[in-house]
Image (tube, rainbow, N blue to C red):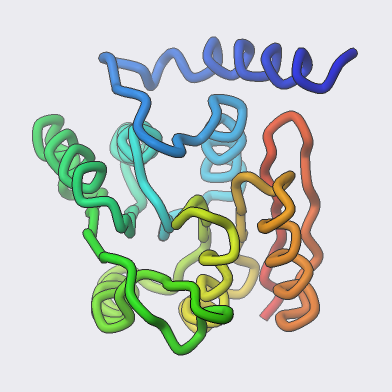
Length: 213
């Protein structure tokens, strides 16, 4: 079967599985997780009993994850987003659905970062430090890190150098768009520098690894 057809079928199947969390229409924001990828993240939250989630890059999928945590009855999500319009939409939707007790969106513009590769940028260093530190102080170490931004791929490198100290032993690290060359380069560097073994699933375009210590 052609890879593109397999991905489309995986997305259709995932949309059916995600239907209970689709209580109302959500727009397809820029760089949104594919349905198959979102279903895989939902599976990891449930099967891995993940309770403290940090997401680099947010969108409508963030609202779906917040709905999941709220319906399950425990867990918290912190989303970091550089695009002001996307961050404003997600924050507004969370407030409208009464999900502010489980999820928070931080608008962190891109800026120069000491951990960035070359001249690329990442989320504003001071904002990320303060928000993640406060999140961990309130809820404990992060047991799921989802890296879905910012774009393009080489700007994602700082995620692990910056957030590695906030990860709990056994935390899951999920990276979207893992089939793209920029992301593959970042994954190789992370594997070498942080002793992680990423597994990529073509039908979801997600790479997954487990932090051992």
